Image (cartoon, rainbow, N blue to C red):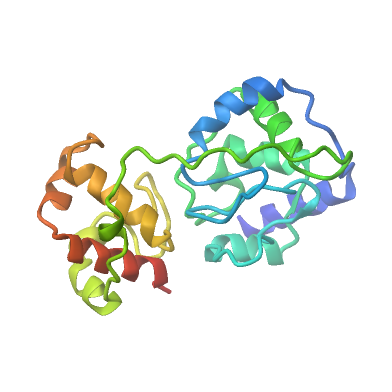
Length: 231
C-alpha cells in the first residue's frame, strides 16, 4: 500500500499541480455540510477534530501547523503526498484507499460530480491560482449547547484512562476508524459536547446514549482530557 501511495504521489507531483476544480462551488458548499463537523475553512478557521482546510491546494499533505496527524498521514506525507486537484479528488472519493490508517471516518463521495463541486468550493480558500478573498468561516457543527460551567471542568487524563476501557472496546486507541469513528485527539470541548448530546438524547444512538448516561460531568471531562492527549 505504501509503495502504491508513493508511486501515485510522484506521478501527480510531476503532473499539472495547478489543475482547477471546474465544479459548482455553491453546491459544493452544501455538500461540505457533511465535512464541517470536523473541518473548518475560511477566515478564522482553526484545527479542531480535523485540520482546517484553508490553502489546502498545492501544498504537502500533513502540513497544517499545530495539528496532530495520524501515523498513516505522517507516513503518507513523508512519502511525498502532495495535495493537487487529482490527489484531493482521490482522497475524498475513498480516504482509506489513499491514506491507510487515517483517523478520518468519512467514507467518501462516490459521485464524481459531488467531488468536483466540493473541490470547487474548497478552491476558493486557497491563494493559488488566484487570490480570492476568504469568506466567513463555515460554522462548526454543534448540535447541542452545553453549559459553560460543564465545559470549564478540567478533566484528569489519568482518571480518563482508567475509565476508557469501555470506550476502547469499540474505538481503537490507534485512531484507525474501521467503520467506528476515531475519538483520539479530539478537542475537549468537542468531545464533551458530543457526549452530553448523547446523554440528553439529542444524538440518537442507543449504545452511546446508554454509555453517556452512566457518566458524570467529571467523568466525561476526564475521558475528554485523556483522548485529547493520547499518544
